[in-house]
Image (cartoon, rainbow, N blue to C red; front, side):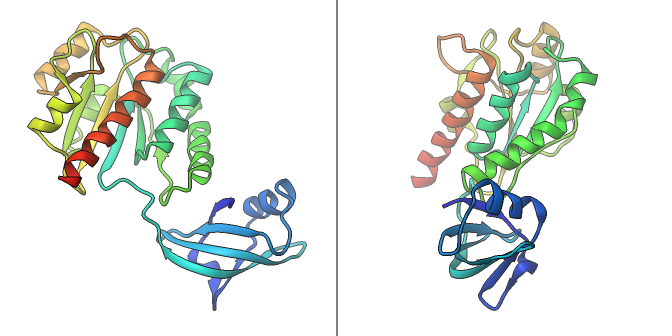
Length: 248
């Protein structure tokens, strides 16, 4: 079923009115939905509604709620991705896949070997937020993540916002993801910042910064991966390791 984000104020006595222009146009004009078809709707409180369309007028769509429940489509820890922006399609891919993999936010950082300069990267943040919103609808996320304002690596590391931080540095890595979780397991409700650099990798100055801050430098194995591939592999393996330990 198509999935859309709504406001809880539109829910009343077992019915939902969809009148905002974006959702209305998508459902009525792009999808050409008809009465009797079903929609998945979710509000800001993570309440998921399984609905059936009752009526479509020129201004709103009326849906009947068949079932409602709290959505569990979210990670049990707060996963953040700090990443040096890539060019064009590669960065769009990173933003989309990070959303699918449950990140709470993407934190774009300008690194020494960053593919984009500060001005160009800042211009793209609105687009990246839009990609995250659309990807959240497609994968039925309970919470819409966001792309933060551009930052420096130093500012992010000094922010004190995160319970745990790990950087992926193939050239200077000393640990695997499993080593990291064995030594410092991520607990339910904790926040983890994952740092991944540009295609050219981190500079010696940035390696020194990680060492000074005692940031674990992790490897993804013997293969050298493109930056966008490294993002999906790193996040996927982190989610896997967290799940293993949660079950145990």
